[in-house]
Figure 1 (cartoon, rainbow, N blue to C red):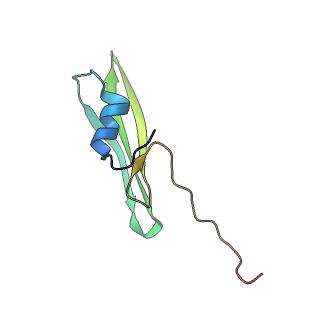
Figure 2: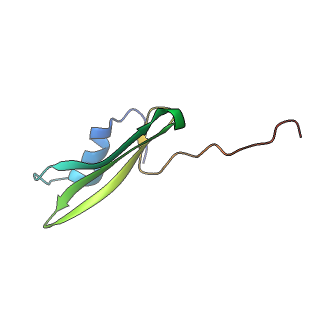
Length: 78
């Protein structure tokens, strides 16, 4: 799914809310700028059961449902 230019709210509405009128809630949040790690776990109710989903912030500012690639250590000059 292309998420370019989509806010977190639009992503949550697309993936979780649909026609539900019960609302959503954030159950987990992490923002470590020094490590470029940011995610939000959002929970919504589908029928009588809660459904949770993680949304990850990428370097380009977009929110996606998969985590960004981590920078791995590299040897330079070899």
